Length: 336
Image: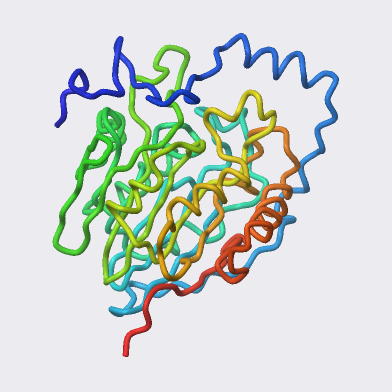
């Protein structure tokens, strides 16, 4: 394992964003937003539970054939990738709340798009960081019990938590470090965000995105990130991509969230950087919206603004994959 002290984005016992616009707001600014600004600001109420459009997933169980690659949006940043016979989950969350407690904290607007027991055998889990809406302890325990052979790929210093939750196979990486396995290869990629699960562990663990290549396709999962300058380098290392997955929600108020969350316009800029110089535009799956209400923008605003920005930039309409919860689509090269 890499010594954190040797990592350029680590100092004074914690990790940090090494770019000029990556400075985080402190607790005082959080109180200014939540206890001050919100008192005079009209925040549109969340829609009724389960009221957003949804579809029944189309899953091949236990495994898809080689040449069949699908992506299914479970909700928020949880995605099931079937890359031929390889089954991959990203940031799995099946709990009712994104919180250390199930009686308080952000509650789901939409239920998970498929029951946990309907999952096919999971081979790989990609974790981006340790926030509760991305690393859910009850879900981790359930996956560890049901799929003990799954490989969990995580950023630096997250392995300790995973072991305490019963995970057996853990691969911990710093930014740009690769993972090579018989059925897939992956790379841990930079993200602009932060970490923490309590009052005293802020930025003690790293945050990241992942590229993964399997069954002759390449996928980029950005995790949770603001706009940052490494997207072109990510494409050079892990691309060209057959599928890009970017966050588009949890951005208002902008003065507070800009350093840690992309808004729809930022997501389009990131996509353009990830596809710079390519001769075809891969589909872009919009994540991190419509499942947990974390910030002030209306729940259905992110995909609407994303579509506007996408059209304004002249990108092909059929490459904007803004799914309904549970939607499944095939992607990548068609064999034969």
